[in-house]
Image 1 (cartoon, helix red, strand yellow):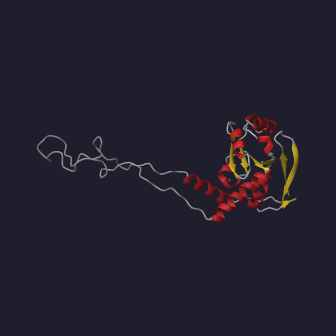
Image 2 (image 1 turned 180 degrees about the vertical axis):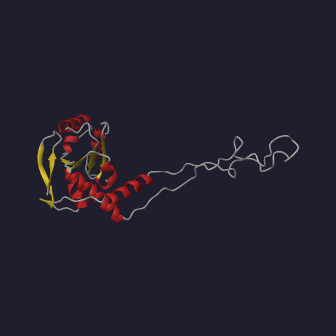
Length: 216
């Protein structure tokens, strides 16, 4: 059983949500494999170089083999010469790694449950009327009151929230704060942030990911 506090934008505690989560041992191997695959999938792999068969130039032998006093050479496209081909250079490559869906679900479930058990998840109630226009000061004061300004904070937003664009514009000037929508949350982004601040509207979604039961 774990209680997750709910705050308003003034930094005052409004109440709490309760979720049934027991102490457990996270599957480090699955989480590690997910992170490796996630980082590999970010690589574009489009670095490329031309071999001697790709560079422009004649295939004719520049001069005869013997009798000129110069070094023997068979083509102007040789890697030894300037403007020649590249030896062992990079070529287009696909770094994509695919993981089974069950492993992805285990990874996000375990990292979220770990953050909850570490008291690194808090909820915030964001009324529509409070964010009628972008204002960084509101969120700056909120994080300062909770002592989170020096931490890497991830804000998890509801994609259906009416004023989500105003919220995004309000927080994007804060140095250590980033955001994602709840359907975009993944283990890597959770692990790279010290604290998760989620809209109270998305708590049921996070509960379903964790596999716990929400007590109403």
